[in-house]
Image (tube, rainbow, N blue to C red; front, side):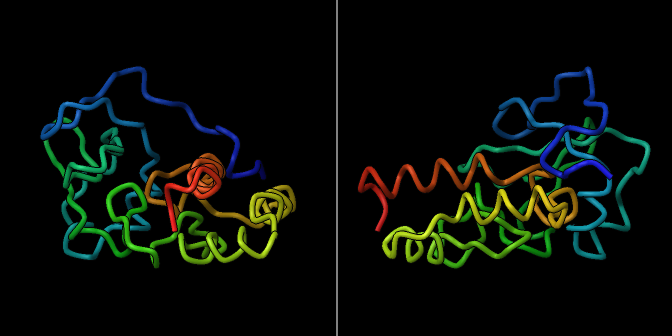
Length: 153
């Protein structure tokens, strides 16, 4: 089994734009949608359709295709890109919230190395845990850089 932090599925060749903010969406696997939508929303998906994730923090839409869109209220979890609360995960597989990352950096721990070790041991499941459907290490690294620059905490 490939690591979840490697691209191991075919991305859609079609560029999809969020129907609300018009930002280009990031293609997500249907397994991500199935794992994270609340039951009422899940009942309405089109399993054969291509879906995308809207990364725009100011947009309410999380997932969309050409016909449907699902907002934050349709998901079982808070979405890192759309919710700036300290208790929202940056890494969903190992529950590294913003608060936990800040505490770790202040105590000279290396969360990136911790996560990377677990990824290499094939323990992550980003495709079913992370709303963006892909590895969180980029988000974790950017967030830590923002701590280091003093813009957080």
